[in-house]
Image (tube, rainbow, N blue to C red; front, side, top):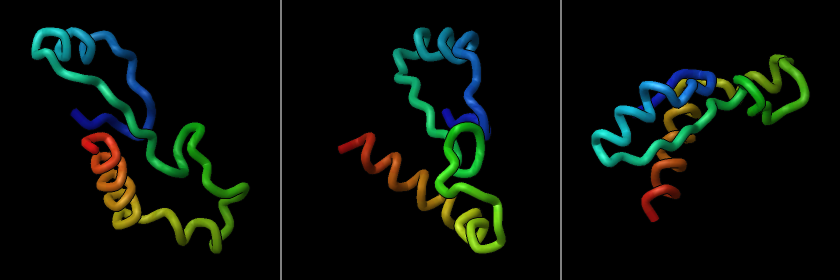
Length: 67
């Protein structure tokens, strides 16, 4: 179950996970919430904000989770 660009309350997700014996993990997208990899939003910094990098982050997160 993948969330959004901000943390979600556990509420219904926790109920679903308990019912399905699932594990809840959360990954915050870089540049959203508290995940600020760089100190500013300059053009130079924003070159690291892309769909490709987001998918790479997710792939790395999932690989780390399953190993």
